[in-house]
Length: 348
Image 1 (cartoon, helix red, strand yellow):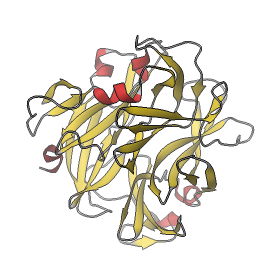
Image 2 (cartoon, one colour; image 1 turned 90 degrees about the horizontal axis):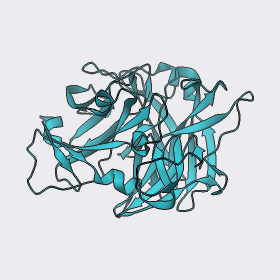
Image 3 (tube, one colour; image 1 turned 135 degrees about the vertical axis):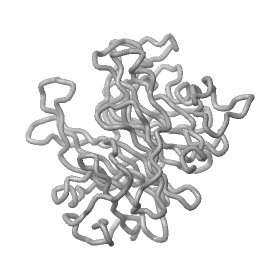
Image 4 (cartoon, helix red, strand yellow; image 1 turned 90 degrees about the vertical axis):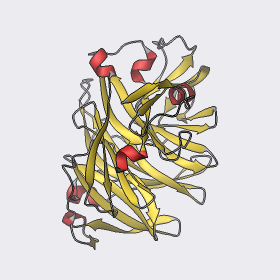
């Protein structure tokens, strides 16, 4: 069941099997202003503590917003990565370059003369250092919507709160196994776990934080951990097929996986596991995006979990991205949507 649209809370408590549609988060992340984020996808969040989160965006529109839901035709577009910090009701946009000539926060060099960007994955903040994973994406130059491909995965560190690049390294695992590691990053018992995808298969890795840098990389081979990334093995589970973006986090004594159906499917699924490496079970379809059904020009993709938000008690905040098959000037066509899903629905 789906509860009627809410801001963040409602006067009557939704039942344990009701998904609540949230409209407040979109208003906070895309406010009125002279120079603000007016559209973007990815919608990945990292908790910064004290009710503050860093939001990572992929291809982004910047410019003036008057709240009339119409996109400016002259505003700049930034490909790759743009950040916003949401603290309470206040949001701040972080870019590279200048307002006149904006660019991504973390810029990529060209690859064989072709334009390339870093598409954000996930990460964490520790001792005023932001640790981030990203895919390097190369554009073919034809201008077609799908004319791009992955070229590698990076791990980089930025100082916080000024977001200056400290260092960047190509993950040596990608040439060996083509897994796009760097989603669902969390710390447990001295290791930072991270997850990746290749052709819908879910893979796990981990590393230790030594001298404020991830080192001693290991990869799950089906039975244990190995330093050889070529021996990685997909995690077992109940019909697990992850989308390009997905989330994994620990809730109480369970691990929760949130993913969307592959190839622009509208269904959002959850799984649970008893260990970081699975097996994953209790597959649940918790929601299906309605926007692409109502408007055939829209597509939905890449659901992500935001467990640091707890305004709705015992419920998980999930976002999913919207985009257009053919560009429009309607700003909300490139805004993510948000829902609250009861943990009881996921775990039962």
